[in-house]
Every structure is written in C-alpha cells, then in structure tokens.
Length: 205
Image 1: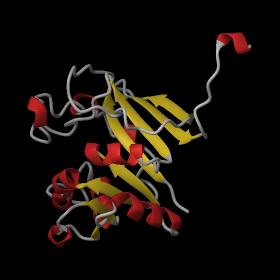
Image 2: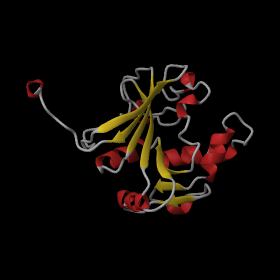
Image 3: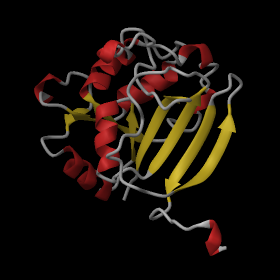
C-alpha cells in the first residue's frame, strides 16, 4: 500500500489560500496571493519531498495553475529539477472534465474522488502527494484518507482566507516524525497518523 501525503503551505493563522502568486485565488476578495515567495530561500523547505518517486493528487484549480507553469520551465532553470519531476509524475485530478487534461500523465479521478483514492492507495506505486487544492484537501481530511501531513508554516498572519482545517475534518491523532526550520524562518513539520484522539484530564495523573 502507498500513502497519501498532504503537503501544505500554511500561514501562522492557518490560511492556505493563494500562496503562489497574486492571481492564484482571489475568491472571497483575497488580495495577499504570493505570500510564500519572500521566504522561499533555496527551496530547502521542500527538501526530500520530491527527491523520490511520487504521484500528484490535485484539485482542478491547482492543476490548471501547475499545467500552465511547470511544462514551460526548462531543466536548467533554478527550479528545473522540480519541473522535471512534476512533468514526469502521474497526475490524479479531481475534475468534472477529464477530457480537458492536457498535461502529460494526467488522469481524472472520476465522480467518486475519495473512492478512487482509496483504490489507488491499495495499489503498489509511489506515494500520493497533494499540493494546494484547498477544497479537495478539506474533502480528504473529512473522509479520513490522509496518512501524513507535511506542514510548511510561514511567519505571516494573513487575517482572512481559506483555512487548512474546517469543522468537517475527522478527529485523528498524529505523531511528529520530523521538525526543522529553514534559513528564512519557515517551520517544517512532518506528522504521521497515530490512531485515534486520546483524551483525559489532569486528575487522571
């Protein structure tokens, strides 16, 4: 079996909307798109995530953004290695229009997105990695199919915007397996599932 890993860029107040650029996602009047770039450094926050085989799991908005950018990045550009990896990886996309998926190795997940991902997890193959795709991520967290969280927490307060977690996320305990901080102050934390949420009180001790 393979894992479903949610790799998320998030602000201190939990916002995940529009990290990559000003026009990425203006819904709800969001005007602060592109907030990760002052802290990008040399890409160290993503170290290890894309150095081994992986498959991407994307919502349609994120897919269209990626498909309009990564195929145009040459291999010898500063982010050429990531571009090559993204272009070569299988792309599993939540979309109502699979016939319009023009980026190579792209496949629609069909009408039962969660069911399709559960089936993919049972197969042999590289781990499945989400990027962006806030609406899809909420659906995955509500359906209890996420195995790992890789959070990149940026030192900014955005005040408004789409949040990482909503009230539909399934209660789940996670175990911290790695933590670090980049030269630009991004906190990198890796969490693996650790069973059910355990409760108690101070009097139990």
